[in-house]
Image (cartoon, rainbow, N blue to C red; front, side):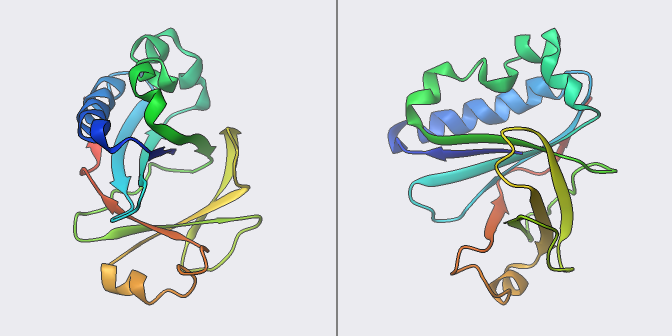
Length: 167
């Protein structure tokens, strides 16, 4: 998962167009299987997340990945707008879940596995900003009734794109 906070609104539309195009390029990299982009609706500054499925963390060391713009190699012109940029690699037995446009992705970071309502994944690489991340796909109404959002215990992401798959 890659999370960005964008602090220069004037380039945000250009960045969004570029990022969606970059995902299509990255999906041609061997080992990258799926990708989907999200945003936190109404956040100021704007907050985004991209969720990828990969076959192995070794994909990040490949020349193909680096030459395709992965790891921030192609986004240098947008870096002045980044208030934050974090990448976390989570262990999973399968691909990232697709989140339909009428659903939201609820994300919780914890020091240990938590609430059974979430699927929990241990962090195994990159920035490792959290030991565990929980994911739940809910309707907007269901997410509004999960206690803890106001306390910052989780965030609710809305899909910006459908899940895209490698060719």
